[in-house]
Image (tube, rainbow, N blue to C red; front, side):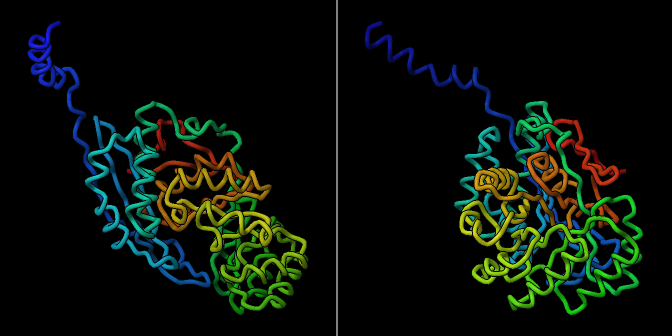
Length: 365
Ligand code: MG
């Protein structure tokens, strides 16, 4: 081809290419704050409330819609409005990008948005649901996991009067393992109330409630005698040295929750904790949570998946990773009365993962 003919061909090439490679179908993104009503007023050392607002997202492209959710965490200075603003701030990126490049998209979201981990989770979960649906496989298969390995989940009992604590324990008859919140002045009466009506294994979460290391050891030694399996975050997150000291004086595993938000936190926790509690709302979604679980396992630590109060969107997303973990505490959707979706189910405490593509959610009637 001589130069003149080449230029002629080249000049028509872009038009021909634009016909052959039709522009990808336009994407749409929605964000909505959803108020989830609690069955019982929920009290921990951090807060007490009758409802929780979470941010719900949808990402639609090519006739496929992915659902996402993030439960903002007050401790990290987030609320549903700030989460919504954070998602809106990357709307241009999400609409322009190829969703099959989800890891690249999330890396850019992590770079562009400071904090706002629940917002990041709401984006990540919607993209992963979309990708699973596009590939026609459930997300546990995407991650190469066997749903039969999904562990038992605990059912959580918030802080309350001994009478109501007893009643909540009885209501949790279907759950073989319970998680009890402590960390206030009422720890002993709370545990005694639970123990007065059940012999089930108990896991206890102090939510950073004990500020004194001697007190923490006394409390944990007492909990050991009450048949408690492990203790979560006994002391404030920044008191790593004190927690390491406590760890040397107790006989049950100590699990990091508030001290462990991201993958980069894990190596420094190894000397102070036996394991980590990973939550999608803390980490910023499934991809970072998966990284965290693999790093913790590589460091020989126990792994746990937890959740905030949220709908079946986030809880199901976490449940798809649950075949990886030693312990799961995925009951946030069971504590609300107006869940917009059905997803993961619990049968006698065992997580039953949905087999549909992506998250496998169906709308609640
Ligand atoms: Mg916790």
